[in-house]
Amino acid sequence: MSSTRVPFETFYREVFLPEHRHPVNVALHIGGTLAGLAWIPLALSAPGMWKLAVLLFPVVHGAPGILGHRLLERSADVGDARWRRKDHSPWLFIAANHRLTFERLLGVK
Image 1: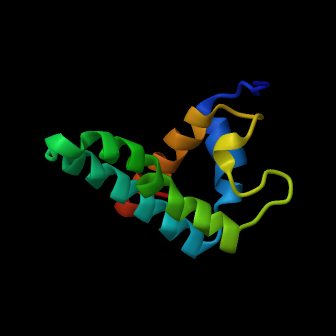
Image 2 (image 1 turned 135 degrees about the horizontal axis):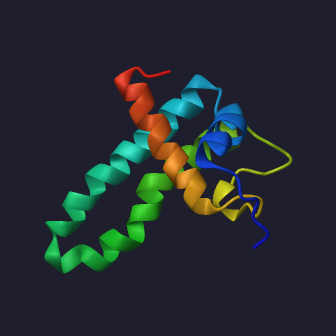
Image 3 (image 1 turned 90 degrees about the vertical axis):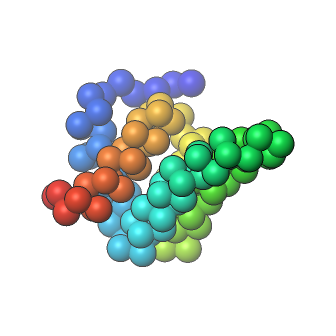
């Protein structure tokens, strides 16, 4: 993977936020993040279903954001599936998505 190494703050401000300007797309990202976080205790409380819960976690967590990019904030350069990008680590996108969620929920700009 050819990944650009930049500080997280730079990545968040210069790469992530410009790709997340549409308010409905941002709302879908927030909804997916919160659904994913709520999914964790649900998965842990269903001992017989934990394998299915683990398999479904990426769908619950990521599908709303993918839908937001597909319908509202498309980019010919990077496509809808941000996790497949090679220019930055997928972990930066995951961390940035969670930061965006909590900043918006707490009213931080």
